Image 1: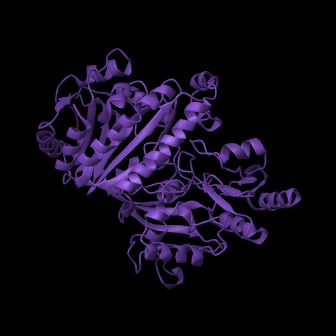
Image 2: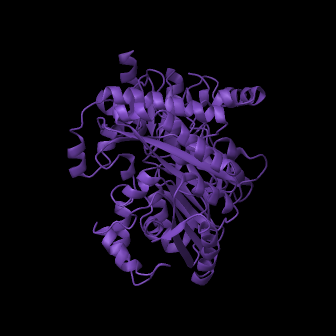
Image 3: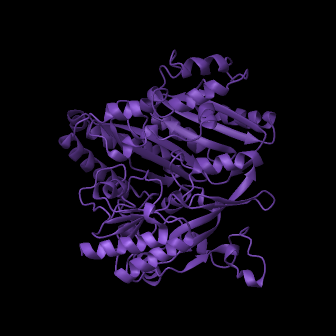
Length: 521
């Protein structure tokens, strides 16, 4: 079998070039892991880095001829085992060379971009045009790729995808929506998604199970001239959740972030630290609703003040409108709602998020503690109930968590009828090579010294499965399904059967990302 992989590697080198085929076992192991621990994971035998859809097609055809499974990797920032091989002898396709911004069309309001392009690179390309994505890019967009996010799903954003270019399991390359028109019969401009049945939607959120995305068309809108920001503190999660319900129809709030007491107190030190420095560098003479923004920002960036002192649960909002006055008017309406249960605090964090849109530093704790989230989505009307019950889940397990030095934190948001509750765990453990490669040298050298903590790790794994099952019993749905959540079990039988039939039609040999969506290996 080893000789067979050597032959496959040689063929792959002829397709993509010798510099873009990796066979070193240690390096393949790094590419085959995400940011969590998986006891049953396999390392890919070969990592290949194609440069375009034609090369992806040739790679897929070669894998089919040789009976090899394929896993598809974007930026490597996921945590539900999406590209982690579930079978031996797999080829892993690293999509990051397909990173071009192919076309920006400001009149028809779309951008065509390679699936391996990072969200940060795309945002920078759009800035000179005064255009903005309808899609809400992930905070990890400094490394996360377009194709990765479209495969994993982002709440309330997938309607902003107008079309996809995909490679099927047999190597066929096709496009969806208006982009799928035969160009010999006229213009195939990708401006319209709903051209016949929604084939685009079929491949969104599939975690790569149905096809490999090589390019996408994203809807754009003109960046409004007006923006406003506000932050509020609440005494309880329930108060913050109730306020989110009350703000449920305020769709002009384009950023809505809720933080728990731990993140509220540590936001200056980890996660948003870089954003605060960026804001401090660009801050002008503007003032917040409370006044003195410039001085507050500078002190926060220098670490000389804790502007979140005494804050427990916090909510951070941003609105936009045609001009500044309209944006502030919209924020005033939201403020009136938020102040019924909370109090206003300096609006530094939402401004920092705007100034520095992307960061991955939050994927470890301040001292290098391991971190893993577990997402859940609910009808917005259940927000208070979920906030209360999830705290009860952790309180019941507090003694054992304290024994192992594990604590939880929450990220919360809402929009267009849903409420997202995403608890995370932190604990001291060894830091993986994947993490180290995304840190600055000083932190990487420091965290490299952390030792394995097997008892805490084992309990963290157990706790995460218990939380997943707790959410399942309460009726949650999820994004980033991959191999972790109980997706198949949650579906009505006929829905599950149809999903299996679609997989059978598109990938009858189960070669694409086997194991994802619970569709078998």
